[in-house]
Figure 1 (tube, rainbow, N blue to C red):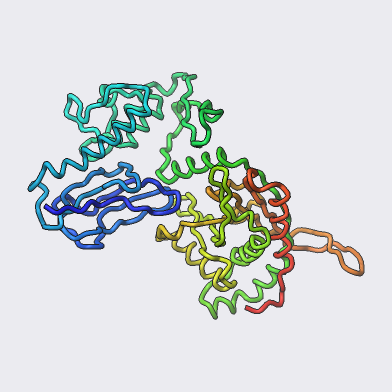
Figure 2 (figure 1 turned 180 degrees about the vertical axis):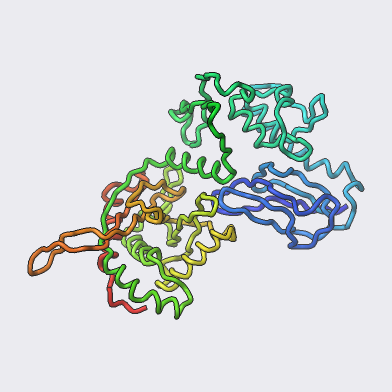
Length: 445
């Protein structure tokens, strides 16, 4: 029968894998072209994948909670309407091929166990290629796998189950009051380390006390944690701080916000006004709008501003305003509001979070006056906006200095010291402050 392989598509810059969260069709179901087939989740966004063909779903190659790599065949659709039992030998071929590739990869890198783990145990439990490869790499025997409680369909052991077993140091049944001093070795995040100091970084195994509460990280929180660890390992972070007088901006916004809302149907916040100053400074100092690949510096032609946004769950996501330098203040305002609302409503699309070249995060939202933000890889800089506060300040005039009340905020600029030196990083954030302080209070919109 004629078959179409459905592969996991590329869903964003630096996204290499996705978790299968929910199959919307079962084996044997008829599906139309572009009809939703499966829900997947990445470290960036959750998304529905449409079918690339019309026919009958004859094979599902990844169970729910399994992780698939970009390009992996995740399902097979028969385009001539044949049932899944018409040609079983052909249907087994893709699974076998995937398992062989996994086993080859593991055999090439693993020194823990030279004997491949069987697909099924003596008790009849089935273990997916991903689970078997992880178990083999970590030295978990088939008898140990038997003791792992599976949370998948029919009690199947998932990637989350085997990683949880390994992360717990294989001591799930140890009493909470027992003292454990062993540490586990953390896999180095950077592939450029070549067995250097990162390979020796270890983190402690922490045993919860009898009165402690254990909260399992959700998928996005684990991915955020991995991404932050990777960034601090890859980029030597330096942070420069500048205080900016934004009294003119506060006065101007108070004057125009009602008319702006009536005319545009949008509320104007401080974020797009500050973004406008950042864009001007990037044009003045384009070497903060770069990425690093090995020993090469990639200078970005486009200015795509990412804006860190809090989700209802408390996690963060970074939607991107593409070609932000081509937008006026009204356009920036509408883009900021649209992306922020989409993020809060979990309605972001994969393209909404791709291609950022510089990121802004607003720590002032939480009442913080400054912060030390972590760079959003593969970018080389990020700016944190502190809270705007009324403070007494020295005001210089031709007639002398006097004390007055001014609206001020701190700008915290973290940058990758491999390619952004202190002079460039400091001058850039100073230029942002200068643009903010020079804002025309009589400006028309």
